[in-house]
Image 1: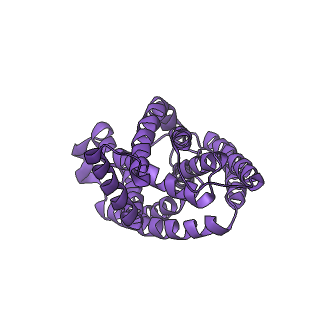
Image 2: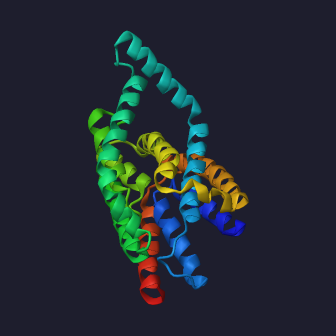
Length: 281
């Protein structure tokens, strides 16, 4: 693995984790495109590549933790206080419960999809098709949202469950986690900023679990010494910096503009991916 490869993938992860364009799809596309250009078999993957992918996700986790640090502290304080008083009427305490419940729902849905998701790493054509479906969902949810006379800025139980189900389905590369969850929020009659903000908060436990637990379950620690740690560390830092900037400006973007732009993007990239790998892979 080269440092340049890690930097490129760090930028891709930082941008695509929070934008509704599927970070996993872009990592699959970038990795397989690199292999095609280097004449490396697509089905050949090292544990170092898997570990880099995990570390890049950790980088974006750091970004969202830093950006939402005040919100996270308020949610934690409200939750702890509610446990003491046994009164969960506080808005932030409810958010904590919804995030915990959403995490459980996500795991229940995503776990059975784990093997399928792993196989899709070597099937960029199918990932491209799922990206197209993500684009269609973004268009549909935006069209529905525009027709609503009133939109809520408050996350309720029903919305939290629907968004958690969407996040679980996004275990499949090509289904954008933020795209599916934000679309679910729009279809639940929430405004874009509220849906996007809750989508990011909901992602924290899942990314944390994947970053901390997965390496111990799937990766042989004895191979760590052979990894290019300079590339991995640099890629992780790049992912965190780009991710932070992405969250900051994406929230401003969705406050003013439609998600249709990302719908067009997903469809174009999805079609291009399907065609390219149909010809050259």
